[in-house]
Image (cartoon, rainbow over all chains, first blue to last red; front, side):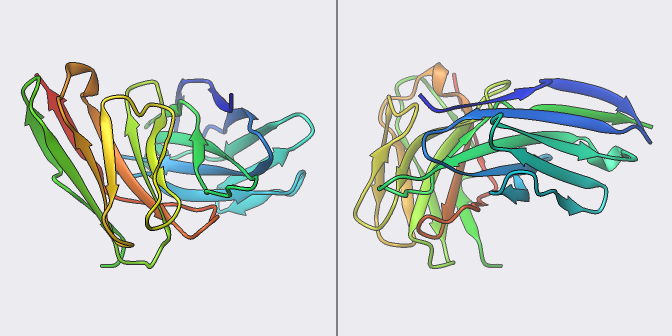
Length: 114
Length: 112
């Protein structure tokens, strides 16, 4: 059975701290790993990773994938209160059906205090 | 604005009542999905439709039915609501085999 596991489940830090969120996956015919940020409403897309060892970066956020060890990390440097959110990791498998469905982890709730 | 539109945004049902959650997208996506989100559980796939005319079960399909009415619309029906179906429901769409989803804004459903 495909599964995605995130850790920690929750995290409280102060502004300016650096945080690392973890995501491990077991996805049949793995194709890609995606990170989403969810504030009050729908998840919004952050990164998609398909190749091992290549860092994706956007401002203070960065992510990397290790396909050998089956995990990904999301780093946030110099955190701000606006980074407070639930961060979701999702894995996508391939195969003949190629349906595009994503398997999500439980999410990590990040709270950044002033 | 283009995207995925879900209705209603909020709903309270009594146990045993039925209702249909509506979802429509205007991005010409082939694939559509229904997820539910519960605290500490992430997003769990209920049903999906890889293309118009096809639907398949996801991880948690029991108690739900779906209809892919046309390419744009994918509805989720609760025939006899139960308190365990209290959740936030998200509809999403993507291109065939596409990696990124576009999500609707969600429906918060409470069953009492």
